[in-house]
Amino acid sequence: MPFLASLIFGLFLTATLLPLVLSLGAWLQLWRTLPERSVVVYTLFGKVIGQVAEPGLFFPIARFGPRVLLMPLFGKAYTVNTRIFQAYLRNQLVNSEEGAPMGVGIWFEGCVAEPNAFLFQNSDPLGSLKANVATAVVKQLSNLRLEVLLENRDALSRKVREEVTPTSAKWGFQLGSTYIRKVAFRDHGMIAEIRRKVVNRLRQVTAAMKQAGDNQVALIHSAADMGAAQRLGEAQAVRPKVIGEALAEIGRDPAVAEALFKLLDLQATLRSPGKIILAPAGGAGLLLNS
Image (cartoon, rainbow, N blue to C red; front, side):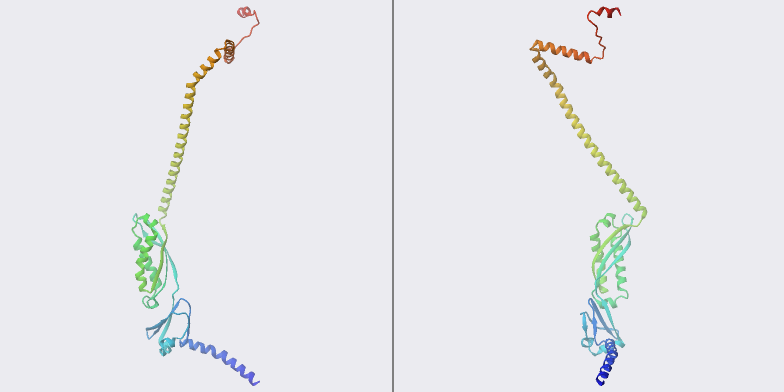
């Protein structure tokens, strides 16, 4: 029984005092756990005394000495996230050289490279970075020709990044990829006019293609007709010769020639539009009297 009572009392003290000890140790900065891609910056009496960037469990008192015990009263520990972040700014208004209002969407990424500058150089570093990117877009892309805005996005993106990088470094950022993802017209009347011009151009191109096809077909037909005419001319030129040779061959036999000419005469008579009256033998007088 005394052993069981001691065990229960020990478990009760452990369950009661252990969370209190852990909380007190964490409040006094005796130990701390740092997650991945994070940096903790320690300040004491308004001055930075150091920072820790290695993830895992560490003991600040072993790194900075007994002065860490004053941190809960006279100092502060700032945790800075150093993961890569991404942002997209929509419809940044710029004007082309032709006076067309354009909306530019730009995407960029970056991370915190200098936690001290990120914490103490600017009260709103991320908001200032976005404003700086938007200003660089307007500065670098305004008054450019419309075809340059629509076609040279890679070169323009590099110019924007070069413009923003020095200022972002002062605020503790390391700017990564920057790319202009969208360039769009903002004037609805201009959009309708461009659509109308594109439709008219497509109609012109379609009509030109159809006319070119018709011309090709006409050329093919003309070539075919010319070839046929040449062949018919050659045939008509050769026809008298062929017929003459055939008649000469037939004329060698008088009986055959006489029968052929009678047959031809009979065919010509049958094809004639005139009427043929057949009368019996010796009935010619009847026809004359009628």
